[in-house]
Length: 368
Length: 122
Image 1 (cartoon, chains in turn orange, brown):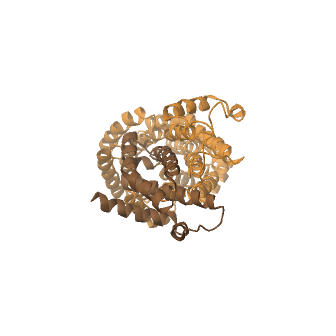
Image 2 (image 1 turned 90 degrees about the vertical axis):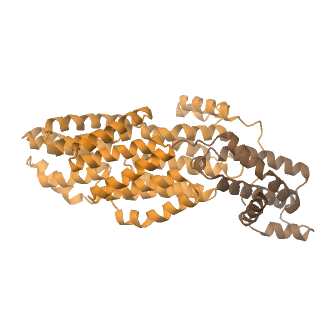
């Protein structure tokens, strides 16, 4: 039966008190939260709502923290079964925390975990009053995951239906996010001019909606695209628009990707040493965020650049750092042949350049 | 693109959607689901509290007012129906029209209510 009547055993928190309670929860170590749950007001829907609101923007700066926090909240709400708030709120918070955990896992290239979290999110959202909106947001994350698995045909097939859902719900920001997937699918299919056109349109629409996060990310992608095209002027102009916005929002993921875009530009224009430096800067940022897949992918790019300058031994070191991470995270289902060739050539200390290029080309597209 | 921008819907806008729908909600709870005036007032207090949080949920912050209103009406109907089913303890009511109301899906009733709301507003 839906729409249960749940009475609060005590007065519920105000939204201001909920925000304060959420800050206290985040400042409390996980192992102490269960015993202190009542004092922390952890079962109050205002606390949980504030926690979700605080965690969501941190996906771009500290995805590992968001994953851990979201998992804690999900487990706390789920077992033992707790009566949270009114009507559909328990199901909503289960869905929302699972969606946060899944999105963070996707950022961290923990794909199998992300799949499971998205299934959990669906189980929660299926019972919310506003399920069309909640399931559509989940649908976006699942399509983004498909994109990362290079299933472009699936993405392009499913995208119009998702876009239509958001438009019917008048969720314009989410509808615009769908266009990112379209632009990225074009980029990864090497249709760079078309991809640039899509992101130019996104810039116009993000400005109209006043959505700085989407605006900054669109410019970050334009930096990458123009970098790949070797168009220095346009790439630098796009990065100049991206960086201040992304810094203000502390969007470290997009900042690191912008830096990677500049590294690509430097490589395409023959400035190998500067490109390596730019790669290292991006790599340090990804390392700090915990995005190990991107760190490994950049190891391969740097290895290729080092080979360009005849530094074969250093290149081998980079590859040796990358290979275990690539295997552990199962990053290259479509690049397995190249991975195998590279692994064997590294063992023989004679790097197979084509395999290296195939593999890092795959990752560069994948993480742009 | 991991996340979305923070919901920016102001609390007074949510309050305004609620207040405009309140007459329709009250009428549905009292006339359709046969709640007493006191029971309906209690329901409306709970609904307001829930609705204020709904407006701050992920995604809902950007939803059109119309969609928010439909969610509110749906919650009101679920409340009225569940409350009466609980009071009846699984049995039938001597009131045939109440039994008829309880047999309908709350979402379906909410769509009818929304249509009525729009007709009144236009």
